[in-house]
Length: 152
Image 1 (cartoon, rainbow, N blue to C red):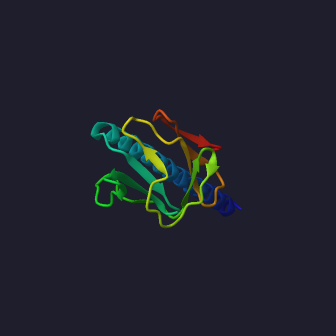
Image 2 (image 1 turned 90 degrees about the vertical axis):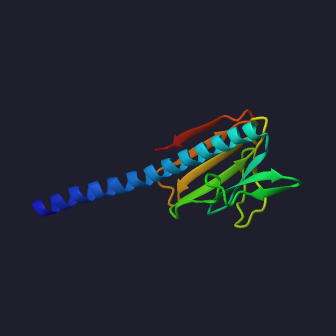
Image 3 (image 1 turned 120 degrees about the horizontal axis):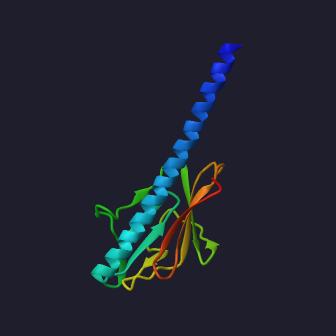
């Protein structure tokens, strides 16, 4: 009987630590995305350039408007393609409508303009099992980003 009680307590701690680990990873990814969007917006203002972000099921990529087309920032130290961990999924909303994310994208869905304005958006980062809640990032036209945990 004592052995069963000890096993139950140990399993409870393991379950809690695994759940918290996924939540921590989700929070870190949401904060990373918000920080990169803020930094890209500031770079757009400082350099007087237009930037954009394209979201795919696997992650997100930053773009810069060069000449007459969007150029992916593949070799940039900060703004390279970011792959999400396999346990996390991303849902991207424009004008309150979810977009079907494509694996291959050649132009951004989200614009970060040199005027400091954004395309209004919402990004939800959640575990693929989606059992405990998600993190919601919202951006408005004046370039303000908010992160909010939903249902944790």
